[in-house]
Length: 398
Image (cartoon, rainbow, N blue to C red; front, side, top):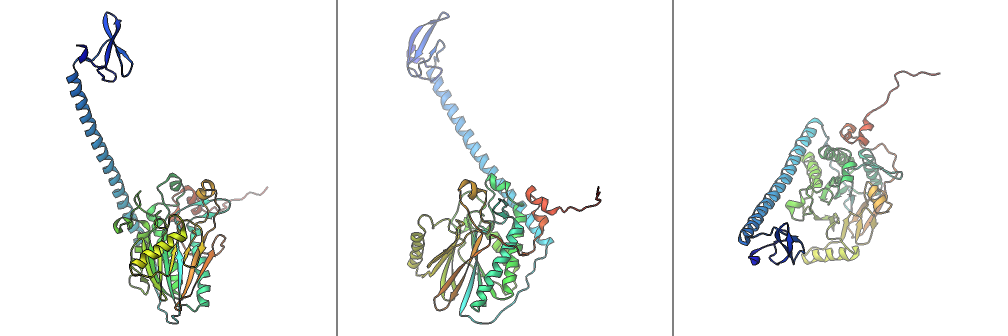
């Protein structure tokens, strides 16, 4: 009988007699070292119960995983649906201008103006740096005006706008949620509004072409993806295609290509655009040469590479890295102990194979900036106060 007994605590059958308790035989388990006077007597029943409980737990785990997946999918689908409705409403209520011009002139050089890591919708309120949509509109306008001066020297008539990702700030982390100016739909609209003013401003003097790739911050999903379907599930891609829709019947040209990497021919030179969060890990010089070698294996000679991502500017011989429009924020200032400055890069490519790269500092600007609707930004308490103006009704002087 003792061989059929099992410990009620660990279900081991390694029991030995250990005295008496209230007139009943007491046993001690060799496995868990605990004592009991009420051992399990039917081992077969115990095995069936354990088997049943395991099956039940397995079914519960499967159901839990399925329900969790469904909830997450439903939340994303509902968010996308509301995002689309809100964005459609904004485009219907606001009229954006798209009157464009066509220019003729020298084709000896082409200008490239790179917009990278704009992080629209981020709020920064440091002693050394402030950022919101109003500051972004000022920095974008100043950047265009400075780039124009360099382009005029080279007698340029054709300009490529290179959008290299992270146009919209992420909202996946708590810090980012607390420091966003407005919701996704309104932020997308404000971003499109600023960028369409950039396009029109440049088009006053130049023929404009636009090429874009997506970054990592604007992705809709938690995980990074590299296939076209997953990579285009990105707010950078949405902004790019909203601009394409606005200028579909105009002189502005949009250059199609891979959403993660695109090669654009500029004045006879192949310019590779990417964001920099994937294939540029590790040593930059080595990574750039590897990318150039990869394209060479496909029969494509890449002459120059531009990217962003790490918010630190560098202009080199065969590649350039743009900084960010936002500059330093809480994360870089407190978590990384780094200081940063807002800046962007522009370039001049000549048909004789030469090229110039220029970093334009945007940290301290005091220009008027592009127009934005401040009421659309009044979502966060930090930005809502800007829409309220005080007025003196009655003043008492003693």
